[in-house]
Length: 291
Length: 261
Image (cartoon, rainbow over all chains, first blue to last red; front, side, top):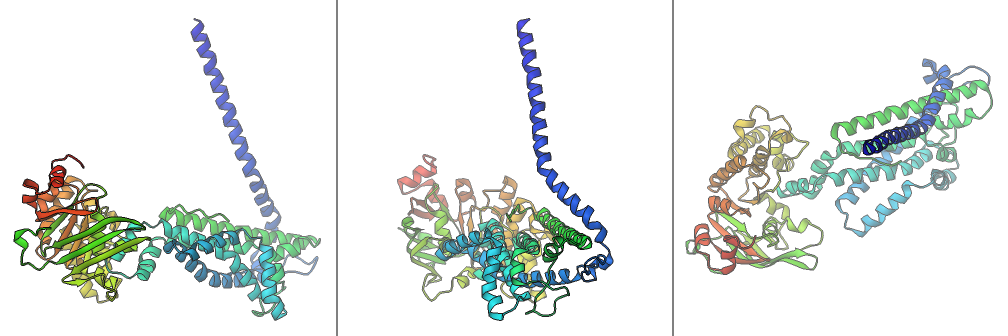
């Protein structure tokens, strides 16, 4: 009689404890997700009024004069991120290949470590470095300077994901290829990279996503322009700069333009990240890069 | 090391002289003098850690690809040292095929492209030649009938035994003279093993085969000659049947009777 009462009490206490823990876990999930939800909701609600076909084909408006568009920012960002990618991909993939295929060399160890440090570098400092390197000698803000800054920011991400993707390729595949009398460089390019290519694509997309959202370095390298790019060595607009410039000026229409730009940026990031998930899903390489 | 009488006067396909190999400062092989007869199956046996896999990986210069690997001595293929300074290891490896313990078809390639990989990745573009090589190699590996209708399927879609035969076909397509096999059946079920053992017995007509195995029964089934290694040294080398029935060395006898594994 006594034993059943004791057992009964323990069981119901355990159930209550279980429910409390479950509630706490759900609460922490909610707390984690809510800010993201609110920010996204805010961006959508504030930015949607500005979105129209014209938003993508017109330049920004004068103060107090409608919503205009962010064509200058879109074209400027495309130009600078595009050029930055062209610079960063060969260098980053090349470095990643070297770290993965020749891990025993001292140069590999040193530069791999440097790479990890560069990945965490404050991007404003990178911007300042490019200011001294490109802007000062050429005496102008420029798309080229912006692209170089973005390339430096993208480089460590691409190098690291390339290295990780290639390291996952089993040694036995390299050996099978070498045993067939296939030279080392062909083994690397036709067998190893081919096997790890979804990981490489992931790294490049993540690098592009990171670069597209960078603002501080562009402020000190590319400056701003209210029109689409006019020359590689001229000031160039970008979407993040529009958010910075128009969001804090105080004119209500300009504020909405800034929110609209933010919405476009967030939507672009979402599409990129979904593409990354698509690649990972197809090959399940399980590569996770920290940005 | 005495040569089995059946081999006196026969020019060996492969001959090692004082072959030593290891990693860093540790030697795994301590001076191997062995003559491998042509067009025969030679089994290399011994307990774990005896150096049999390292030995075979020295024969196609795969051992040196591991960071820290060291090799000394000579390995003569048809009388010429493959470790001579002037020799291109890539050229050596084209004459020697290798099949690994776990089947390793290239995962991003179809069955067809896997088989001809050794040709296409070395520049061969002639479609007719490639088709012919693919069919011949797959027939030679007893796999043609099973895959002829699905050559475009991924190499990884085959069963373990089929994948291993695919890897054998891939090795055959390069038309090697020697085929090295490192415990090729250890990851396979008995049926698949039997198929591959039968294949090995057929292949020796055209190739010299060296097979690493820890399976005594397998050696007695497929191997004409057997070399027994222990702790990096060659203990005994003879025709398989006499070696198993009448081993000359005590260590050999103890291994064969299962006194140590």
